Image (cartoon, rainbow, N blue to C red; front, side, top):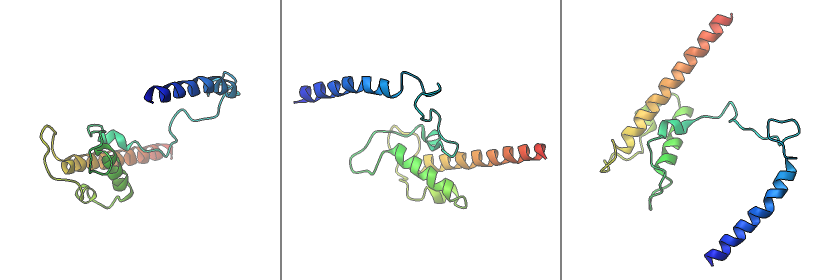
Length: 135
């Protein structure tokens, strides 16, 4: 059964390849007449995953999402609620130490939110300096 699904999947991909090539006229996204899709993230995109690089992306039974996805969600929440301290932003995280991991989920979250706040303040200062030099 698994072998049949694999064969069907490979066949579908093989049949789609020529259709995709025809759709783009053989031209890349940067060439005139090529497909019109972004190769870089839009300017409003945030890279919260940067602050969560050390978190596991493996799903654990009984938990909602992965440690990485929970961390990214906490970073997004913290970014939206600027008035919250890192402690308040990470309030619901586990303070239980897991053997083999550095710190607790709560302590890693607090550290990541603090780094996020630091980077936000640095970016604001840089923008103010640029505006000051342009005036």
